[in-house]
Image: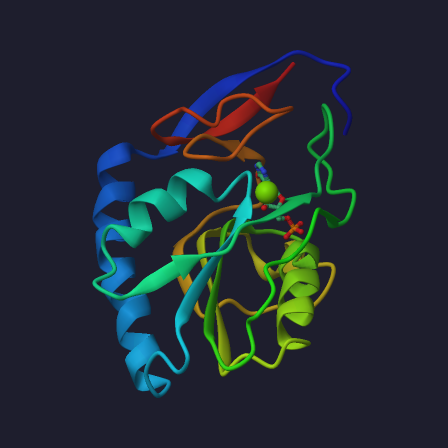
Length: 185
Ligand code: IMP
Ligand code: MG
């Protein structure tokens, strides 16, 4: 579907308090997984996939009592006014020097799986000590175009286009404090 109709913010699926409570659980969960995987190795690197993960990662890391660094990667999969994935395109460089590191890739949502599988494959090429994937939202398996499993999931949601808390439509609505459905005429 392209943006021929008009769009507006619709029903709230997850309000700000539920998001905050879940993110406060997820930070320690991810930290415990790092320990269970054998500890930090040569260092813990969180890789948020921008731009959508920017709000989530900012909240998540403040619930992670771990010595970590951030390595940003920018990927576009919904360029322009569309609610249909156009496949993952990496913009710029992936962080380097991940060899021996404990990497956690962070994204806002697992949808078709294309973005996360491309980024995960590129990270693995650098031979990190381990790679885990943490997403706030996950659409049902029927949304996947490539098989992909995340290690940490905040919420399972229906196969609808959602905005808020970092997720955008055509670049807007990332600043909504809740996750809402996008409605169209
Ligand atoms: P995937 O490659 O299809 O799994 O898409 C993942 C990326 O697409 C996410 O990082 C989001 O930026 C974007 N995306 C997927 N579903 C939605 C949605 O419902 N609303 C807003 N962005 C979405
Ligand atoms: Mg994104």
